[in-house]
Length: 525
Image (cartoon, rainbow, N blue to C red; front, top):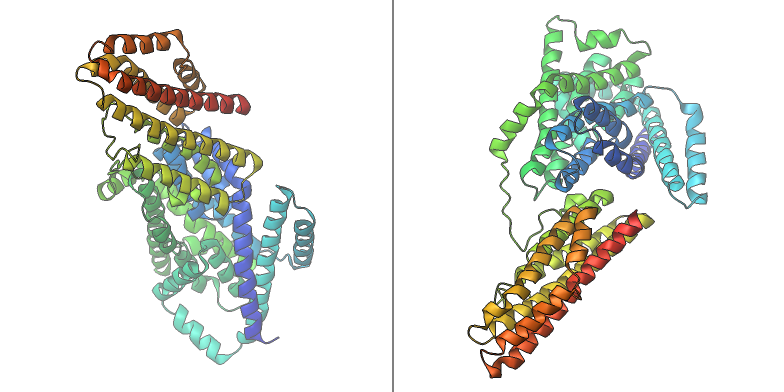
């Protein structure tokens, strides 16, 4: 195999390994990360440790960023803790680069072969996911070996040395090349590992590779800019916080590099003291290129957030027809997406109003256009979540329950719309007699929307008890309405009977939703 063929094969395997590892490690660590985050929001030290843990496992600051975006939306984590987790996850993801600095060639074949056999033989989770993650790591290491082998014959070629001298002769040009490599690989860790492999093969030394390493930290900015489209308020500020960290880190480390070239012993001097040659030294440089900016920036995170608020304020415009909590980014983390769906369902339920006589639309529509549009958006999100993610059995059951709630809320919207039209058709003066019926529906919609949004056990119980349409008080309201309103106009009896029927349908559906929520609560205990 020629050198060029070996390098292309190595790059292909490296890309494949990165994808396999990223997918499986995020699947394995996402739930653990969320559970850990729930208990650390009051401790800055624990938030920083959680960031280290998340970065080391997920190997992607971008993945951590968008999980935090979804968790902010669901109220699991506050902005202050999210910023700490985000900054320190950049330090944690550098751990993987040390694999490229260690000679583990003898075990690569066993790692790839064993993980591949396990992945093919075991279909149950999480073992299949573990196998996929190990297989990805093995393929990454094998790809790096191929890149190094393909590069070995080139290092003595004159033309290759000339290209390297031109590329690495200027620190700023080398920094730009590192940025481009990271943007291409969509992983600063992956780009750093390639740089370490090239240095291990003798293509260049530690001093020439340092600006390359510093440039890799900025590569994911382009990807995040694409993925963050449509985010607003605190969500977009978290994304921009990660971008700010990368830009600040790159500028700070390049400043230290130029200071070191002026004769001040800093990062390069510390790396030179490391045993193990260029690979270990560059892995340490990669670690320091994230650790030093994180250490410097952490005390100033509140100030950074204040600055970001000036450019990306919390300017969410609550449009009734548009989802407030559900975003495309949330689909990447099924567990958090499932936490966001009830919040959006509660918002949908709260938009139902029996007091409006026309429900913003024609009688045939039965519900407001905004209500119909938002309900369709929630349904579309649920379908995409089921199709685009390998959900666990528990997650699938939760999604089915939420879709049942959605369908019931949509029916409630239609029934309340009919009730509103029946109210408008009552004889003059009879509307006041219906006020208790309308108040009962409004009260239970308010209770149900709050119970749906918060998923709190006590609020679900209150909603369930309040919405019992067979309660004697509800029957008394119906009798009083028919008896008192009949005096206004005998010809209005049919309209009043129709309104009672519409009330009964709406009341039954509201109580049906409360029963579904009680069942979900009991099943989850």
